Image (cartoon, rainbow, N blue to C red):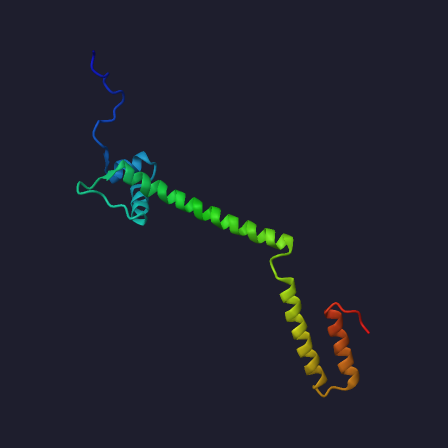
Length: 137
């Protein structure tokens, strides 16, 4: 039996170690940008001052995944709110009617105890009834 054929390509059998400059060149970014990305991902070089391929990939592309996930979550929330508005579920109609009814009752009470002439009170209550959607008397 013959031995295994020699490996093709230029990748050594030992794990690759990347300096910041060589990794930046390979990933098409400036060394400063790569350093910032790796710092944000809490990726530190080994004792030799170099990074493993796995460290680089998790530092650079792991952040991309997180950012894409955030964008997707924000889009999902936006669509959820838009759907609630479209379906009329954004505001609770029953609670709004209850609150406006209480507000109208308070305004009517203030009008009645205001000391305004009766005609002015009736005019204000007529306007309030129109704002509430009720038919005028």
